[in-house]
Length: 611
Image (cartoon, rainbow, N blue to C red; front, side, top):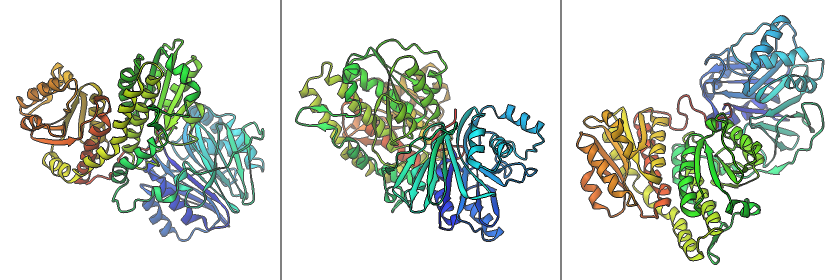
C-alpha cells in the first residue's frame, strides 16, 4: 500500500526517483508527489498516476538536486486530492523545511493532531501523515535524526517513512515499523524503496530495515539505530532477483507475463525440493520441525484474498496427504475471534509479499498462544518470513501485476509439497509419494498446454463480455478455484462475479440465473464429477449459459455446455494448479475488452500493509 522511493548520492535525483516510482506504482496510484532538495526544497504533487506527476513537473520547470524522495499513494485517511498527496511538510510557522513521505497508518493521529493544534500548528490536509511531519517539526532542534526518533516514540501504528530537511541538505532519514522499507547500497549513494523493484536497476546490495529501526544516510555512510537511539547492525545482502525479471519484455502487461511465466516459475519452485530416488520432498526451511509437524493435532492456514484461496486448497491437500485435521481462516478474522489454539496446533501464514498486515498480525497472535508458526511467502526477508518459526519460500520471482496469478499457483504447489513432506513422515509409502511427485513435476507442462488455448479463451470471453453478472461454481478442492476465478474477474474487469460451491447454488443463488447468464463450472473428472454435471443441468434448465473447465477428452461435458476449456488430467487434489489457469486468462481478456487497466485496477494495491 503506497510506494516510497528516496535517494541521496551524487546523481541528479529527479529521473532516478521518477523511474523508481513507476516501478512501484502497482502499490498505489491515487496520487503522486516528489520532493527534491537542491539550493531550495521543491515539492510537486498531483492527483493521478506518475505520468501526471511528470507532466506537472514539466510545467513547473527543472528541479535540481541530488537528495530527494517520491511517493505514490493508495488512499487511507483523507480523499484523493492534491492536498492529501505526499510529500507532506512541517508547519510553515517553524520554517524548518521538513518534508516526509509515509506508508502505513498512524492510529493515534487524532490525539497528536489536537496536541499540535494547541501548540499553534495549522494543518492543510486530511491525512494522518501530515501529523507526523508536524510532530517532527515540533521536535526539531537542529538534528533531524533525533527529531525523527523522538516523534516515532510518540506514534502508535504502522509506518515506513523517509524524511528530509532543508537545514540538513546532506542527510536522509528513513524508518519503519510494520510497513516494508529497504535501503540499496551503492557507491557514494543510497536508494531507499518500499521493495527492491525500485532498487535493482542501481545496485544489487541492500539491507532491510527491521521494525522500530531508524537509518541516517549521508552520501558517504549510514548508521542504523532504534527509535531510542540504540545502535543496531544492518546486514547488507545480495538482492534475490535482477532487472530482467521485472521488465515486461515482449508482453503487453505484467499480468499476462506472469500468467505465462507460471510453468517456469513452478519448475524453479520445485527445483531441489523433490528427491526422485528417495521418493520424498526436501524442504530445508521446515526440516528442523519435521517431528512437530508429523505429530501435529491441527493445522490452520491463514491468508487474505488470493492467498486465502490457496489456504483453502492447502486444507484439502493436508487432510488428504497427511490426514491431519486442517482449517483455513481469514487472517483478519483469526486475530480478533479469540481463536482456540491448543497444544499441537500449527498455523501457516500465506502471503505473496510477506507484508500483509492482517496475516502478519494473525501469525503473531498464533505464536503468542503457543502455535508453531510457519510461513509460505515469496519475498525473502519480508516481515512474515522473519517472524515465523520456519517456512518455505515460493521462489516464483517478483510479481508486479496487482491481480495475483503465479503467486497463487506457487502457494498451492508449496502447500502440496508441504502436505507430502508431512504425509511421508506419517503413513505415505515411498511408492505413493514418488508417483504423486511425478504428477507434480508434470504440472508445468500441463499449464503450457492450457496456455495454448489463449485465443480460444479470448473468443469465448467475447461472447459474454456484455454480461454484468457471472457465477463461478466448483466442488471440493475446485471450490476455491471458483472463488479465485470470480475474484480475478472482479478485480480487473469490474464485472460482478460470485464464486460458490456448486451445491450451494440451489439454496438461494439459483434465483439470480436468467437467460444467457454466464455460469463458469469447474467440471473436471474427480470424486464429485457426477454431482457437478447435475448442477450444470440445473443452470441450463433456467436459461443460463455454461462455460466449463473440463478434463481433456471429456466429450460428455461438451454436450452439456455452450463452451469448454480443457485441462490435462491430474490427481484430484492437484487439479487447482491447472483449472485456475483458464480463469486467469479469461479475466485478463475480459479486462482488455472492457478497456480497463489490467495491471492497475481501481481502488486496489498489490500489497495490503495496513489493517
